[in-house]
Image 1 (tube, rainbow, N blue to C red):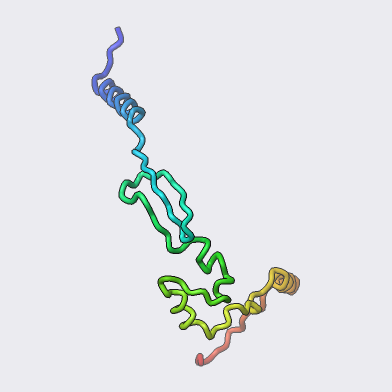
Image 2: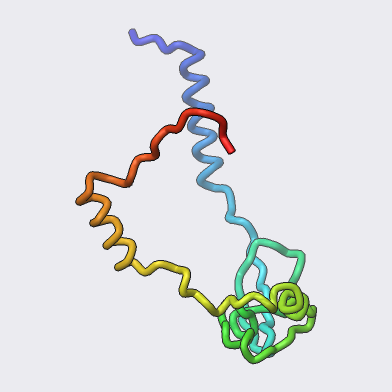
Length: 131
């Protein structure tokens, strides 16, 4: 006759109960949330957060300088005056000048020269005090 160990039977029964419970648990409740863009356009999304039914955005892709760099040139100001503060602080810098950025071609030519010469130039150790 086959004899079962009670601890093994209890463990298996407990695992089966956990599996059954996990498979019958309900999904979290979904709530509708309306997003109002800066231009007044709206769209609705489903969320698990019940706290806010409507979110009004003051910044989105239509009025943020990151997505519209021409706004900086036009001098458009925003409601929070953050753009104005930024322009006062960094306005004298020429952020439009990107000539200091090396192109991929220039970098690859420099890499070819370094590879042909056996690598980048090595620093020579000097004896004495550092300046």
